[in-house]
Image 1 (cartoon, protein in one colour):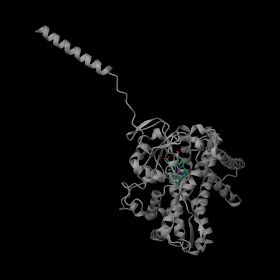
Image 2 (cartoon, rainbow, N blue to C red):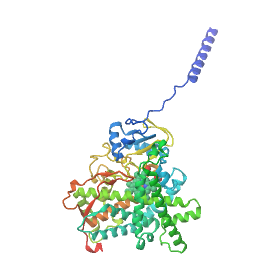
Image 3 (cartoon, protein in one colour):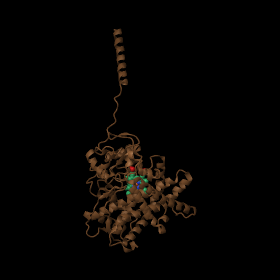
Length: 510
Ligand code: HEM
């Protein structure tokens, strides 16, 4: 009995041991990575490049309706992934943000960012963090933004006075708004005296250089996507980028040189501007070099002007197209401000309709519809698919703002949705609600968001309060073209020509 028992228990132990050995030593079936996200088939070598079209945000939107919110294309040799739903945007910008916080190293970054020293093109790391910290602290956080309030109000007042002289005739308003915002940025970044009085011409030059740079940045460089063609500058795009960059470099050199001379002879402005702060940090800490300073200045001028200006132009266009909206905004302005003075930024918190109108403009017309591209530091499994290392990713904020699951009547311009009691009353655009991300999200969220919103609000308010806006005779508001032109920021394709008619006390325009 005992031996039988012994035999049984011994064989049980041996069997258990063999089973354990079998399972532990069994070669694991090789885990295959998830497939790439779905997307249209491309051509050999060029992939889907030709299918992206002149308005890629619209192409990607149409493709996402067919293939789903996670889309894979090939831009030549580059894996190109497009995210088009709030849930996936949250996954990218929040859950996997660290892995996707770098920017692709394209020719634009190589030839026009002072060696990747602008904040927007800088690799994710300590220098990027330092530059963001400096600009936030000295220009872009609540305190310096409050301190520069008068600069904004004065520049817009000067535009309003100039427009009064044009009443009765049609004005192309886009360039006027653009120049005014450039002036505001120039004043708060390098000081007033470089851009006013006898130096006022510089605003025009800065605008010209910025526009050249923005156009060059948006150029398509074949070699970025088809490495075998890297050595041929097809179409001369790289040569153009280098020329544009040299012009910007000389312009900034000139300003820095003059600013340095002024500092040595004690001629600087009373209020310390960003350039003085950067010089001081360079001297004290030795952490910055001149190219870092130029990179920061270029970013502020370029990322900060075109985006805000195009948003104001879209807001005006929407109001001209729906005159009842214009009337509602003006009624609110008259109630809070009256007609004897211009609006001030301190009035804005009392204007819920104006705020809702600006939010609705950001929803339907995000200035950077695909945000700025990110790149995958490592290959990851994402939303059930595989995103390869070094893939380029974009978030289609334009499509997300039109997502039927997130917005009622998504294609309609309805500011009331953001008013108290409206279905999107609580939606904020600060990167917390992923159905509404005109400024992006995560670590790389727009560093100038607060200033951008302030500029758009006060400029829209002052223009709408001071003038009635009518289209030239013979044009009807409901036929106003709302076609977009895709670039670094999303502009109107057809210029907005309008006839401003003063509506405040004549004294206000003096
Ligand atoms: C209406 C105004 C503006 C809009 C709609 C806008 C939008 C954006 C967007 C979508 C991004 C990319 C975010 C991402 O990758 O997730 C961005 C980045 C950036 N923006 Fe803005 N922006 C505006 C105004 C400004 C202003 C006023 C400034 C500066 C004064 C500015 C400076 C920047 C910079 C430096 C970056 C790069 C951030 C980084 O890579 O870390 N922007 N902006």
